[in-house]
Image (spheres, protein in one colour):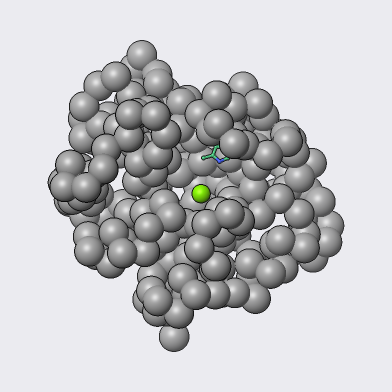
Length: 221
Ligand code: TZP
Ligand code: MG
């Protein structure tokens, strides 16, 4: 039995913070705390890119962030590392199209953990659902500086196209989303937005999060 039913996943996706140590000049633990009090509903540990932590330091940061999420009952997802997810007792794993095969990840994590898969087309979305994805990450919605190998910009139309193709699973839009564009992504029938820089790079993390949360809460309701 899937522990994460679609309705629970939809609610969790509303405001999804993705972050690793390279995405902020501050202590990621403090950024996460402020984002949680500001209203994020899901967190993904994505320790990637130039200067990313490795080995013990990476595990130690994952454990600290995991602990903060546990304290506040925010589900904790690990990007593209099943072993780390299992080691820190994460609530789920997110994999991209170039990462591990989604069906193998599902087999490894079992039915109790949430599985997110990136998808850029209806075909990729269908394969991901067949492989056991609980939700799809769709993007980039807009140009992004946070992912070096990002796909071509899909825009909110990328989400609308999946819905038109009959893809009904929970979907989160990602890539370059700001308070100015969040409502357009939700209007395309995304269940939520995932951001890095709009929160992790904000001068006032709590205020930036609260502003985004007000938009996604209204649009999902
Ligand atoms: N996947 C697609 S775009 C992206 C990821 C991880 C980066 C999102 O970061 P930002 O700063 O919200 O554009
Ligand atoms: Mg990836």
